[in-house]
Length: 460
Image 1 (tube, rainbow, N blue to C red):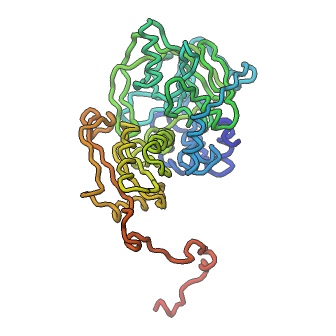
Image 2: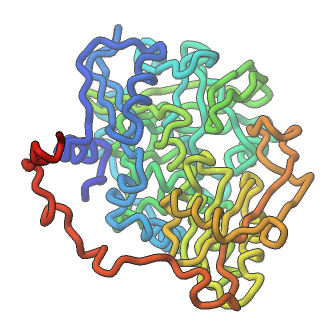
């Protein structure tokens, strides 16, 4: 399995020529983010010489759909189906002892100074400081013993403190229950895990589903986990680095601004605080960072949303074939839906079902099944030739959207759906795409002489 661990995946990227090794001395202040963004979607970056640190930094380990498909051992059309199968049938983790867990090779229990220990970058000009952006944030329900995994932005706000943005989801729910009881909520932050486990952490699931068990199903074998030193949390045993701590009750401190996925800044406000109690790491650890608003960030959020969206639409339109949250819409706001249309009006039902799936979705485009929804030129072509606003447009005003969309009024705005499917009663030739027989079989190398040139007399 190429993606068995963070390191085996890096080895695979290197063997394929998809890992850029940067030996030049680089700064945590913007430079790592700048270089990684330059290579976004092309190569992962491995910085061996980070100013004032002996620990290397990696970014961009999965910055295309093909990368994630390869890690999942499928193709880009198979990602959603494999992901949904894993969500429906999680595989329990296998608990190993400390001796079997590489992340326990080094254990630090006192005098913790995060910025002395770890090369945590500053990504954007107006970011409020150094941010951990690729840590799996793991908490446990003390009653059911089930864990919840997510990725939250984490600002270094003290030697051993992190400010954390908790959106009103599962981690927030568990924290509020603990806070109302006057207790801190134990947590662990795993940095540097394989891309399959990373992707599983973003699954949209009912409360009580452990995303590490989804990772096991995606991998085809139980994920090995180990118990933390100072908190009752199980973490991936092969992680590069783990921070252990507690979210403090009734404590809020300033956090932000921070550059987020819409390519704008999330504002500064008082947020929850994590007190770090231990750090464990592998020998010669590697620090992993995700540069916000790059393809890696988009796809990590987008692919699990596609899986959830597909399931939602299928309840209403059984002929749905595929869905795509496009990078141009930051993999949150724009959904392209492919359907096999059997009755008039199904495309509009698919639009409504998509809006019902997530308040983030702002624009929906529905196309016929023969359209490649990952080819935006084809999508734009059907908008140009199969869409008439008078009859094919769906508009919904004053609806809940994303508060991170600056064009909304505190998250309230308009949504738009475009039915770009061919009418079922259209004349056979009206929407028949042009086709050149034999085109798909032509191989240009069989025809082109790349050494040949035009005869001189034809240039006079």
